[in-house]
Length: 412
Image (cartoon, rainbow, N blue to C red; front, side, top):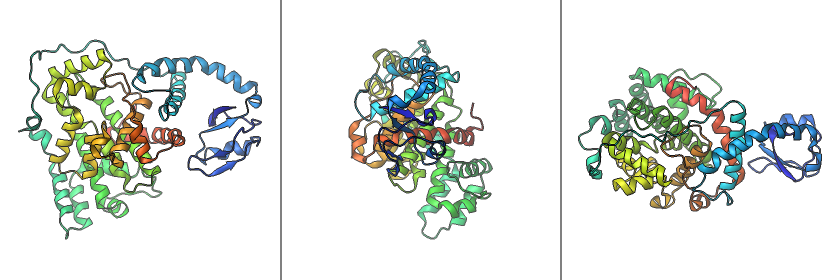
């Protein structure tokens, strides 16, 4: 018996076990011989892989696997060191690793060349520099503490019981760049609406004021931080990872039946915003912190705690509070590395898991090579199942390029 991915299934293979969709819908019974019609409809049902009787695999399948073997070996060599902080023999990490290997083997086959983290860091000139105390990190920095006026106006309108959706749509529409990006997002596969949405007022009527204001927030924050100097952190990679984390958050929340999944996307999108503050406020000291994290194979937030007496999640939470963000977003930003700090709220747990998934299945080279440790307590608390990992990865990959285009206008 062997688990075979949907693209590798061929006519004549025999199921070794009953086949179900990721959501538990029965498809075919054990012992069924796959026909051409089966192969056509399995993808539409969301089936990712099937358990197959090995004696029925055939020479064609074995030949294809021999061709793919070198790329599978490269994927193991690439991912093995990156998963070193996780136990790859325990669930759900074992399943995540297996699907990540499959994904990257296909990427290597297509010519993917991973960006290797440079061993050379910018020369640190902050020897003896004392970390700023947390309250001073955001003090007197208008560019960081203050979001554009349009968002403040929207928040004020939302706080007023007599405000209307038309007023909120009018406030958003005054910012032409924001309006264009917002309509691109609403019309993208992120939502999958069948008809063209050509006005903010129409978007408000479909999504609601809270949802649209949350999306507005994400677009504005990315725009505000998009052009920070990239001496330590590749900003393109940073935001691509953030978008990937947001998509994983949204998809996982949807599987769990959560409403208003936009907040999960934006929470994932903004989860590392505190890192941008630390980079901007203490670049030399942060350079030392990155070097220590790489040398000691530490998660960045732990290296930050050791060197800076804080970490990016704490700073991000403080910034989110100053921005008057909703409590759910504050929990996601402030507790994505330590969900217990938010009493294992569903938002914090989802963002934590989404961050790990985004590191494991993303092409972006971040500050350190190691994938953060996935905390099993967060996984168990919200009741996710390993069977959802593969379709989640598939859906995120399907939406990723379109959402990147919304925010940056390019996908390569």
